[in-house]
Amino acid sequence: MRTFACVGSALALALLSASTTYAGSLRAPATPIWAPTWQAPFDEYAGIVSFGNTSGHFWYDYNNGFARTDRASGKHDRYCGSVKSQDTPCTHLVRNGTRYLNFPEIDFCCACCNEAKGCGLVVPNWIGNSNGSYVGRVTTSRGIEADKWLVKGLQSNYWYQTPAGAAVELDQDPDDYQYFDPTKYSTSPINAETFDLPSQQ
Image (spheres, one colour):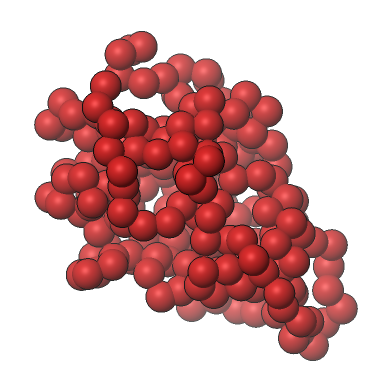
């Protein structure tokens, strides 16, 4: 297993140092807390130097300390692209406080960074912990009614979820826009093997 210092700040780091005010016309609902286990497919538009589109899937298992993000192409992801800047699938795996990057089609896996550097698992109440503010109930560009929250950190971060709590969108403006499919959002238990590293498979 190789170790690389990946370029960019992890979501957990990007969401720190928040200070915002209420800007919505509706009474703010309860501050979102992620389900301890959830998953959903997504489409993404992202990039640091150049932008591109991809699709993927996100799995989250907070109680066991796991998270996984698959992308059909990691070229425009701030981490995958800093290690292998090519159009190939890339998976983020967070286990025991370390973020790994796996490129299955080119048989390459490395340890990227750890939670001490902001690369660990996002906590379920990250919006409340970062003093997030309610923007209002909106209709997204994809026609989905959602509650929108703003968290100011190293950048403006927007979280959208349905009134029932299903993931809709995560914008790390202006670098990364993830559009989840709330109709396929699930909080069912996730098989532990989903989070295995290549050496464990």
